[in-house]
Length: 160
Image (cartoon, rainbow, N blue to C red; front, side, top):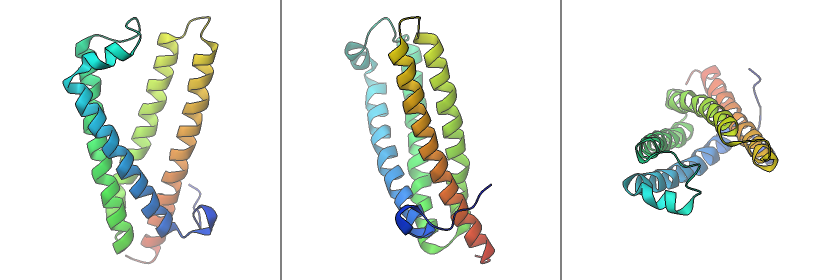
C-alpha cells in the first residue's frame, strides 16, 4: 500500500489523523442519534418517504438498529484514533483501520443493491447520483484510511 508523507495542505500525518478522528466522531455521533431515534419510531421515516420504496417496519427497524450499533462503534474507534494519535500509540489506531475498510465495502455493496433494486429504465438521475456520490464518498474514505495507515506505519517505524 502506498504511504503518504503529509496530509492535505501540508499538515503532518498526526494532525491529519486527529482531524479525521474529530470529524468522524462527530459524524458518527450524529448518525447514532438519528438512527437510534428513528429506530424507536420508524413510521416517521415512512411518512417522509415514498411508501412504495420503503421496506417493511421490521426490516427498516433492523437496518436502523444495525446503523446505530455501527455508528456507536465508529464513534468509539474515532475517539481511540484521536487518543492514539495524540499519545503516539499505534495499537489504538488498529480498530479504526479495521472498521473503516469494512464500512467502505458495506457502503459499496448497499449502494449497488439499492441501485439495482430501485432503479428502472427511467431512473437515470437516480443511478448517476448514486454513482457520483458513492464514488466521491468511497474515495474520501479511502484517502482517510491511507492517511491513518501511513501514520500507523510511521509510528511503527519509530518503535512506538
